[in-house]
Length: 314
Image (tube, rainbow, N blue to C red; front, side, top):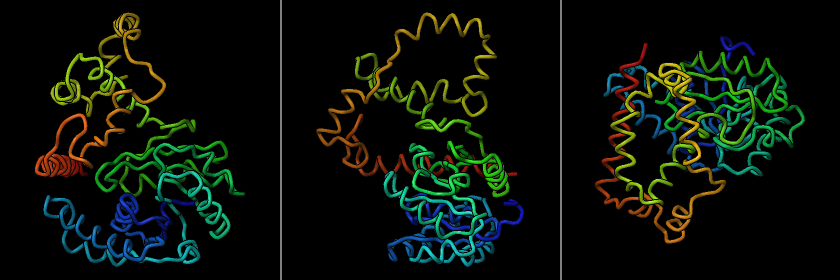
């Protein structure tokens, strides 16, 4: 597949990620077929895309006159045969369920042209396991976009055990063409790169609260007002080089034995879930949340991402 010749892309699943993926490709001039088993969800997806694009224009990202053409490039369907017919690239964004994904890829493999690349947007499930029921596993690859995908640039391109080098390279090239920041993940491991790093931090954050070292508000403040500020321009390994690997080693030799190394979810987290303290869903998690506070938190995140995209666009 030549990334410069990709004209037709299909997205499987019109939910939270699926409509965002459709938007990304449509804005870049690619024809999109969006598939779902729920017609209502398909209608809502188009409305969401229009709302996203309108909000972006209001924040100085894109042009009003480009919204309608982008929407026109997206057609919806309830039929897998239509979604696979002319697709150069297909990306699946169904629910995180291995059985469902295996069945989807088995059908995609049977119905799509042999040269079509088949990608999964899973955030944690093994690419190799997803491809297990398919015949042509060489063309199946992971493309983990981050939510919201139309604002966050990163895409982890993951190689399953059977993924060919050409499919990996072609997928990287396509992600670059649509304006994303692809990174190559050479091993198909749980959580890939981003979620392994993210949840290692979360494990220690929860452990600090569980062991009464500090409360949840303090943990978040330490990150937001401390090392979190420099993370966008100084990653952890670059920071280690800056500080000196000898100093880093000395710190690790002293500190690491004191950090949480549990192999399952924390007891505190398990207790909260058992009580129904689920966070924003229930109004209480590690902190209490009023409806206004929930709205403010979500609004702050969206506004921050919009500013970031505007400030960093070419």
